[in-house]
Image (tube, rainbow, N blue to C red; front, side):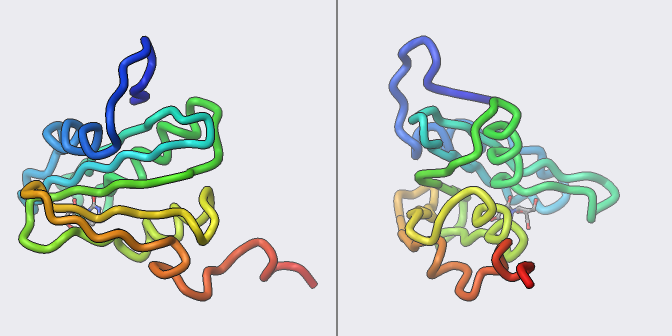
Length: 138
Ligand code: THU
């Protein structure tokens, strides 16, 4: 889903909080929302989508990234992840790698709770020693 069309101004937090409500999390009961601002300034959102075959579930960040790429964009400038927990939810290892595919190390990732606690870390801090295309050069 892309937000920001029709001139609607929405913050990343508002976007992530809103999409979180659509999360399909009947197995963990842990709803997560993610919002990404791309290089163009548009906001793309995603929520976790669980599956009865547990490993087939997808994270909120993956959904937001898929929406961004489907819209023809490939550069993340900022990301926001929110969940209803005491501590800000941190992206899982796989999602850190997925975010790093489209954002450089300086990209700020805000991890938040629905109660308003926020923690900001860069992608480089979240994934030190990121595996990148340069590692495949001979
Ligand atoms: N989850 C996310 O969507 N993003 C994260 O950053 C952490 C975990 C989801 C996956 C699963 O549906 C639920 O949270 C519990 O792990």
